[in-house]
Image: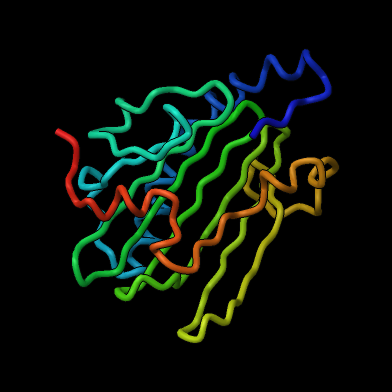
Length: 193
């Protein structure tokens, strides 16, 4: 999935903009995910995550570490999974493309039902979109969302161009753990050596 900017000069600056904010975002992502995982009921030692990606041949595969995931020029997506038997499961899916990136956190209860999703979509145009969704035991959803400035994280009104990337901005909601695209690889239970 690729969305191009209309101004080619601005397009050249996108990788620079995304990389320049990466160290700040990376630290915030780890902290935010740690908080999310605690609310989910999962203790998250970062090194214990199982790593999955579909970057090589559009087929999800497990990797020993994020460094082993092959790059993808259009869209790179890596999933980090913390799962233990008879425990909730927390998943962090990080995506990065030319024009935008996103982070999606999933919490599944011990029966594999989705409890909550937190999604943040960031663009090279200095705005982002965030949403949180909670699901009760009957599956009833409550949600809240807003746009924000990536410069200062303050809430903003809907930016111009948001409709152009509506599909990319839409979070993927998996109601059951078995619905995640790498579930069959996850259930094999063995990590690569």
